[in-house]
Length: 226
Image (cartoon, rainbow, N blue to C red; front, top):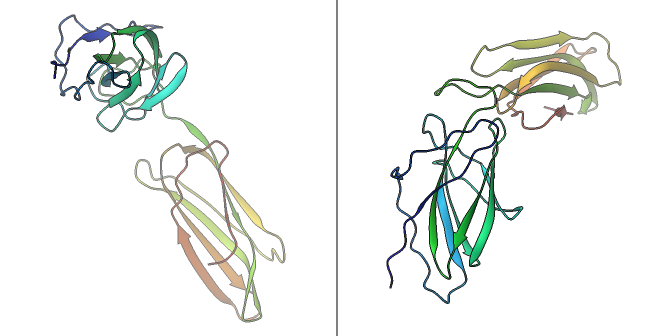
């Protein structure tokens, strides 16, 4: 089997991205290449930030079509790439997009190192700008053994970080549901939701807790019983 050709291709970074020095060594081994005549070549590499830390979840597109996403170390591998010249785009939310080209011969492999700079301009080692949205907690009344419980209280506590809390108490909500809006909830963070139901006849309380994670804009979580 022919030796895999190790080539360092540095993509030109748009909108202020930085170039890596020629001849820089990659901190990983390129996967075994394909022999000529097999199903195309291989494009493999690593995506990192300006401090050299691998970036997880970056989208790798070839000729406009997404072909891979980076793993937790920033690595990726795309097989079956036809011979010829191809456009490559690397995108990750919070970072400047990188574009460039790569040329492959039949069955060849290419080893690519891409460095993305933060849109926020934070110094190396600092996180990109935090993305926030509104998390709305909705709770409904329920029945248990013929007894009706209405929503009495909702409390939401941010897990870790600043540990912010949102809460409200309602009286005599009867058949209606209630909502507690939590503004500026942080994407990717978990929140502890505690709902208390109350039976006005027996004066019994029932409390349950959940820990949803914020992962979409204007996220709403609904609870209808403990």
